[in-house]
Structures are given as C-alpha cells and as structure tokens.
Image (cartoon, rainbow, N blue to C red; front, side):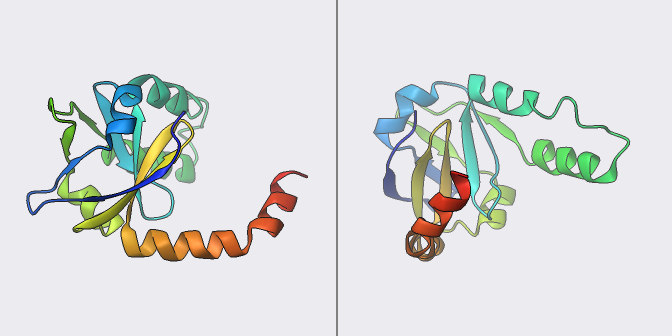
Length: 140
C-alpha cells in the first residue's frame, strides 16, 4: 500500500528519483500513464494488470470506451528505474501533468501519483476543506 506525500524535483532532462519509501513496493518495471486530474500515475506491474483488467469488458463499439482506452494506453510507458530509483518521465506525460521541476509524489493505495507541487497543494487544501462532505458522500 502506498501512503504519504513527498516533495521531489524533476531535472532538466525529465528525470526524477522515486521516493525511497516507494521503490521496493513499486518493483521493476513500472507503468507510468496519465492520471485522472492532470497528474501522472505510476503503477507496479501487477497493480497495473489488475487495474486494466477492469476495462477488458468495455465495449469497443462505444466511442467513449475506445477513446478512454486510446488515451490511457497510448500515454502509458513501461519504465525500469535505474539502480538509484531514478526514472525518465516522457515529455508527453510531463506536458499533460504540467510537471516541470517541483513535484509532489503521493501515495494512493495501489499506485502513486506525481503532481505539480503548487497544483497539488491547492487541490489538497480544497479537498481538506471539503473532507466532511466527501466522507458523507463516499460512505453512503
């Protein structure tokens, strides 16, 4: 399970060192793809396979299903971190997430997300302000 939030940096070549606390659980290779709210999602290979198995039943005859699969899989990248835990983030994922230098790496149970630090701090602040309502709605 991935827990916690860590501030990191992406260098000018698009490389980032994964938080040491996440490296062992992520294993190698990992899958990087688009996250839902303009972030980047990183999955251990087994969690990725479980995640995408949910979409096997989506009918390819429906445009929204086709488009969802196209975006998710075309933006996905299988990466092997180097021995220091550093990964190279593709330019398309960096553009999508607005990931330039200062980022937050957050645990989200079965995967991690990489956010632009300012956007994550703003989003987290909003979410914390709505926490009571969110819990009520989710727990119904």
